[in-house]
Amino acid sequence: MGVECVRHTAGGLDSAKRRKRMSGSWKHNRPLRWMLVGLGLLGIVGVTGCQVDVGGQTLPSPYYMSDDVQYYTPGPEFKLAREAAAQREARAEQNLQRR
Image (cartoon, rainbow, N blue to C red; front, side, top):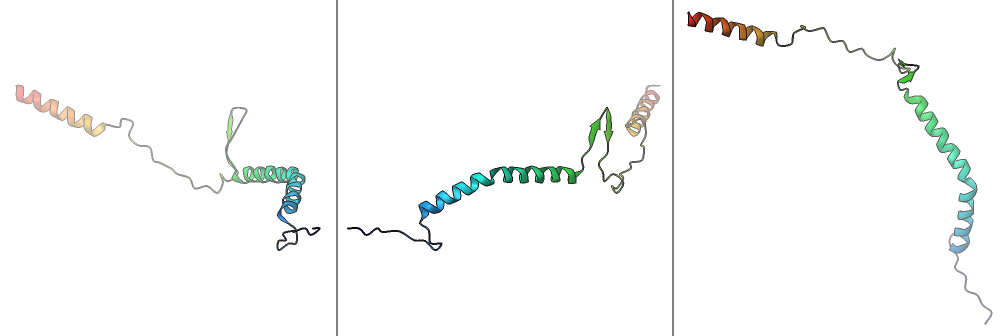
């Protein structure tokens, strides 16, 4: 009987033809997609601004002028000054009690 049954979708093509057409278009656009991904990554790296080590120098990020500076006042050279003073007092008391 010479009647063929063809399934039609909303676009007018059956699924096998649509798959074939889509697979071909993906292959043709592959280099373009890789170029766009590469350019996107290059743009992201360029925008972030990170520190760079060049010739032994650590160069700052491009935003170092607008960065807030954290300054910590210098503390005592000997960190345990109170503990050392308490031990001296305890030793002096022991020496007084022994006499």
